[in-house]
Image (cartoon, rainbow, N blue to C red; front, side):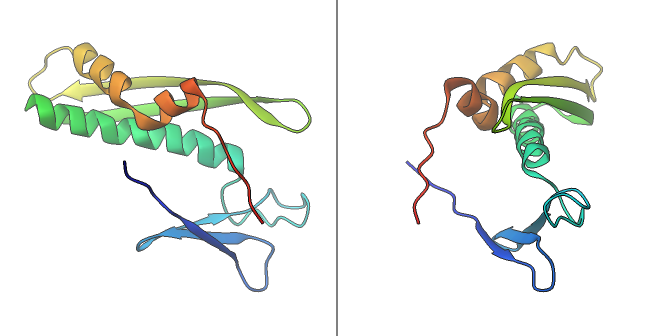
Length: 133
């Protein structure tokens, strides 16, 4: 078993937060004018969609490496449906296309990546969340 920890802190002089893991950072904020937001970074729904699509992009590369094939262009688009109060992600749709450098059909690679994608599989199965103070 392994784990990942990220840290977030407020950004001085704003109501945004800076998140980091290792040497990588991201700014989290609300849209300009919403609950003190200034639109300085991604909101939660955008981050969730980016996690889903970003993980899949990585898994396409991992899968191509395992299959010993070379990938060219990758295109991933994620639409996150939101509804309710409190607002919840109710569905996500990801559209994927990629080019194999040898010109072959990428469908097998996409299916294999789909089977191994940690974020999509975790969301599909449901993840228990504990919030402590």
